[in-house]
Length: 607
Image 1: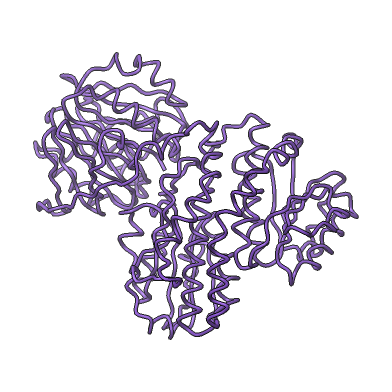
Image 2 (image 1 turned 180 degrees about the horizontal axis):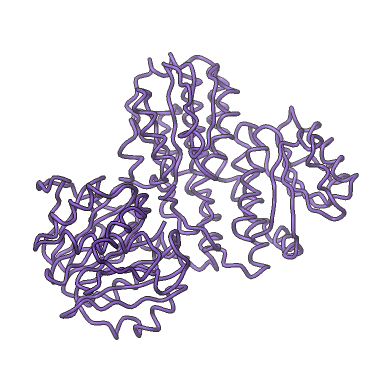
């Protein structure tokens, strides 16, 4: 969840660290700190946002040195305080550590180190690592790191400075992301590529249980036995402009507006001569033809994508689909059929619960397709096959464009399965393909009429509770709309399958309470409207999202947003746009920090 960055080279490290941390603040912003070596390790830490660290270091000018590590924290062990902020060090301040992840057995390790005479000044699990490194260090940093790797349980990406090795920066990872950047002027480590993209596009993705030693001129890589290994340098194709706001007030608004492009970029390379080509998966068509079941696993918005995909895939193929929250799947001992596949959905490709589910499924001998956005991420590397969503960097904590790209990936997969298995006629397949390719223009049409929605949303900055309802695919969209609202505006909201309202939750409806109803599915439209009438008759205020020409809905709903017509299978890509905008504008009206909502982080790399 936290962000780490490190540098060793010919330039002043502090400014590079601060710039890198500013690109990683979406991963955590409870506290921040840097450690820079200049004849000794100098550490500066603050509670709160990175701006405080900039002020304390005079934008880096007050902290000299050509090697250092930095950290922006999402608090897990211990409250957001200066004492709990990273970097952490040993008593002599000769070893400094920054850490992303959670050490599961830290309490036992802490007791052991206390028994050995070590004193702790923080509540964090990370400080244990600093003292353990001190205990095991015998002039060889690599061996000290290996010894703690063998004793620590949990997830970690570490950046480490040893005062006795002043020109060397060390890093190691297990289940938390870590990338190395390399240039002639120095070497970098970071939790994510945007932190170092200003300086290099040549990166190395570190695999689990690998160690890296960096000097200003070199990168050396080692396995957990200390043996030297060779790593491949990858070239990052997107540039810094993709990771900047580009004139928008917030990253979230920019990323909402990027959805037509990312949808197009995800589907277009996979359509050749009017036919979907998924040869990149390297899965023989015979596997698809013999499928008996599909399992889709994700967390948060990725789970909502999976729910929408289930309705779509089951509608056009004869394959049963199960959708699970990754955090539940990994603990319920699921009974998985042979001749099935699993699909793990994750924007970052590092989501801890999803990664654990992937590993469990592979142990059962079930092939796994990863739908991820980050090239070289853990899920991308460990999955049997990977279907990338070409969304580019998504900076806002609340996902929007990655969600749209994931839907696009499932449309491709669903249509491909339908054709391979002979579930659609050629004419229907062609019509679906053509309709899918019109989605970007239809999203643009919705975005062009957002001002009316902005005015409506601003009236609900003071709301306490809201409902979102829908049926079928619209139910999946209602869950996503509710999540968007609550995570960035802090307004309590709930999503319900519309038919379930009468089974208890309708008792919560009060005069004036806003209920957002999605009604895009023709075969469920009248039933959804009946549920809307039930809410209105009990005093609810209705905001409806429906297809064009359903003007009769204005007799029931007080506010209606119309989306262009498309095949109902693809409706989620259109109906979600007004809900994203609604959540965004409500949050802005409340004065919330839209891109960095409280208590949240972009990449959930801990359980």
